[in-house]
Length: 105
Image 1 (cartoon, helix red, strand yellow):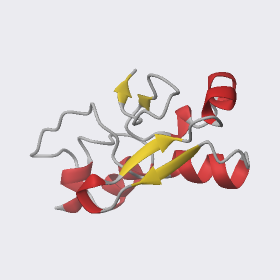
Image 2 (spheres, rainbow, N blue to C red; image 1 turned 180 degrees about the horizontal axis):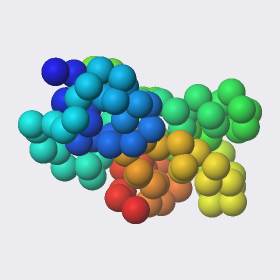
Image 3 (tube, rainbow, N blue to C red; image 1 turned 60 degrees about the horizontal axis):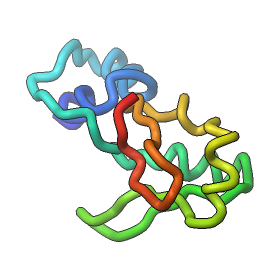
């Protein structure tokens, strides 16, 4: 059931591999893939690999978002963009000034 719920939000990458492993061929659910699924891959890549700390989580629970760190992201993100291919939902940040990641490509 969880894989069926995730599949419309992130149809490629790790979710796709898990659906094949567990025999989930398609989802009964539809989702608007115009928002971030909060997997955190971009945050971890930016913080642990690039050591730039330009992307972070803010808020808790249903208010949790991925945002850019003002001042840092304005200088780094427009040039880097290395986190973009990691996104399982295929989303790309629209701007760099403390906006939530989640604008569709």
